[in-house]
Image 1: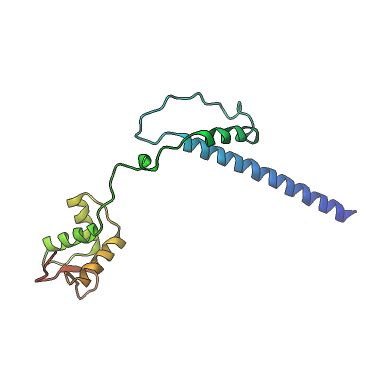
Image 2 (image 1 turned 45 degrees about the horizontal axis):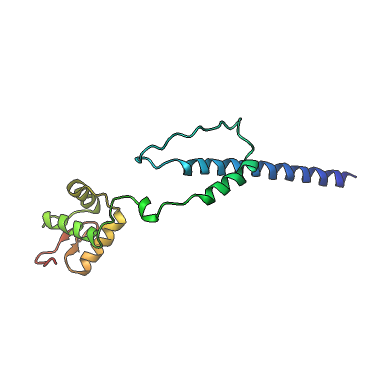
Length: 163
C-alpha cells in the first residue's frame, strides 16, 4: 500500500513537472515569435497592429496552430534584401592595415594593442587581436614584419618591398 502511494505521488509530481515545462516552453516560444515579428531597428516603422494582453489572449496551445498557418502562408523577402548594406571587407585587408601601421611607425616596434588602437584611430575599423596576430604571421611569412627579441612587439622589416 505504501509503495503504490509513493509511486502514485511520483507520477503526480512528474505530471506537474511536465505541465510546468510545457507552459514555460510555450511562453518562451511566444516571446520568440513576438520578437521575430518586430521590424528591424532602423527600418521604416510598420503600421502598429493592436496587441492583445496576455490575460486576454487565448491559451498558447489553442492559438499556436492558427499562427503557424498564417506564418506558412506569408512570403519571406529575398535573402539579399535582408542583408545589411555594409559590404564585407576585401580579403587581405587586415594584413594591409597592420603593414601600413608598422611601416608608418618604423623602426619603432609596436605591440598588438598599439597596432589595434592605431588602426582604429586611423581607419575607423576595430580588428580583433586574433586577426592582428594572424596578419602579423602572414607578414612575417612574407618577410615584411619581424618579431622583436622580447617576443611581444613587432616592427616593419628594413628593406622590405611591399606589394
